[in-house]
Structures are given as structure tokens and as C-alpha cells.
Length: 358
Image (tube, rainbow, N blue to C red; front, side, top):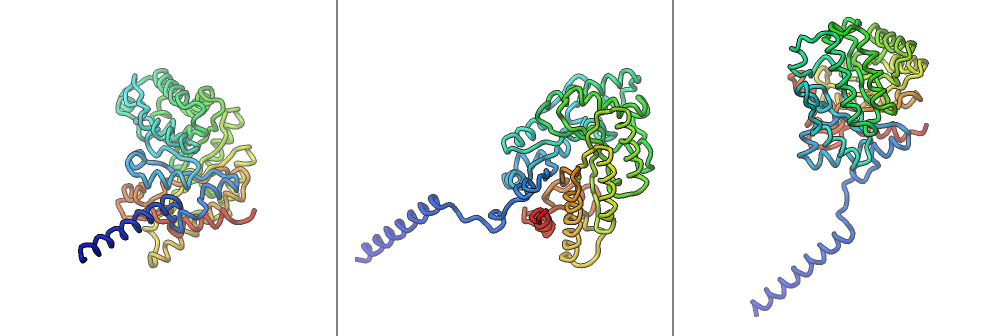
């Protein structure tokens, strides 16, 4: 009798277990309150603005949750590193598009736009280039071939390129780089012309940090691109990076005025690399997260208020893969998801702004 009772209990448990599995398969596993919320991507689409993030290749390949959050929350991605010169062009006569192609394929599979970053920069250059002792004519040919090859490879797949990155230095003059020393200041105009020839439909941007508000550096950037417009150079916009901290975010009125003067030149603006460091702030963690959220909220609000501000891009999205701790050698949490991909107050702040009526 005891054996019979145990057998009947087992059959009952088995029936209940199979029934539960069938119900889950038919109805689906209930989503968390976060995943059930309308994504940043959907809200941004309603506001007709691109919402993007810089993407690192290793987590894109190896972390399913990274891919899931990226595709759900963002409509655009930027290559954090793999489209820079030394990654794409490691040897003078050899290009390697393997990692960058992986990123672009992910974007295509998830109906996302791609911002190309970057064609001309003073950093992340291969040794063969920096130590090549090239003549002006040789370096012109190298740069032209690089731009034609890279932009041509992604023709029709990259909607916007950061053609020249950080050409204005911290002294508010053209940065003293290999490009300036050997070619001269016209390397900037030439880079834009070559990029336009390689893909006439791509939007071409000059990108820089430290000039988001008003001041000497933003004046230098403005004067640079105004001259390009006057010379008929095919430039379509300016990227304002927006790497800021709790104590040095520019006043929103200054950012608005800066965006507006680019509009007067007929240029778009993208916020291209935003993150907000906590390490220089004071107060409890909750207070610093609240201050961080306010900066994100304010900057997105300014962008939405200007018709020519058409993209709002973060330099990453999870603190697990932020560049800030590596660069500053200090712990930080500068992005909108924590290390475990949980949304922070900054994420909620962006949602609230996007949900507001126009």
C-alpha cells in the first residue's frame, strides 16, 4: 500500500510539473517590470531622435545580455574602437574589417543605424604610420586610400561618420598631429571631400570634446566648421561629445545657444559620446546618482528642444564596460545601467524626458 501511495504521488507531481511547463510555453514567462516598460528606443522614435550607444566588440560577441539590452534600448550604435585607424588598417597594404563587420551585421540584424568612428584622429594610429617618415604626398595618398577604402567598404551601411575627431586641441588651436605637421591644415577639408566622394549619402561630422557649451574652445570649433561651410566643404554636422562630471557639466542655456549657432550654419548636431562621471561629486551614492540623472535629463531635454539636434549617443551603456575607470584609474559608474544591467536613475530620467509632450 505504501508503495502504491508513493507511486500515485509521483504521478500527481509529474502531471503538475508537465502542466506547469505547458502553461509557461503557451503563455510565456512573465517579463520583469523593466523589460515590460517601453524602451528608450521606442520612445525616441516617437520623438524623431536617434538614441545610440558606443559598443565594445568583446561583450557584443560574448555576453547575451549585452546584446539584448543594446538591441532593445538603442536605435543606433557607434564602434567604440574597431573602426579606428589601427584596428582597420594594421599594415600599410592590409585592412582588417572582421570586428567592424561583426558590429555592422549586428546593427543590420536589429534594424539599427551605425555611426562610423572615426576616420582621422591623432590617436590609435598604427606604428607603420607614425614611424614611417612619409612625405606630404605619400601621407596624402595614404589618408585618401584609407578614407576611400573604409567609407567605400561601408557605403550605404553607415549613416554618419565622425570624419575628423578632436582636430582642435586644448589650446583652442589646430592640434599638433602627424596630419597637421606633414600635410598642413587642409587635411581636414580633404578628408571630408574624400569621404563624401566615397559615400555621397553619408552624413559627415566634425567631432570634439570640451566645446559643448560656450567658451573659447567651442568658439574655435565653430570658427573651424564655419570656414568649412564657407569653402563649400561637404560637412553636415558637429558632434558634441559630452564627457562630463557632476561638477563640470556645461549650463543648459549655453549648450542650447551653441547648438543654435550651428543650426544657423545649416548644420546638424549629434551628442556623440555622453557619460557623466561620479568620482568628483560629493554626497551619498543615492545623491550622486540623482545628480547624474539630472545632467542626463537636462542634456537630452536641450537636444530635444532644438530641431537640428538629431541624435543622442552615450559612450557605452553599462558600467560594466565603461571606459572611465580604465582612463581615470578610479572606480566610477558613469552610465545608465549598472554592472548587472539594471537601470539606474539616469535611465529613468531619459525615459521621462522622452515621454514628455512636445
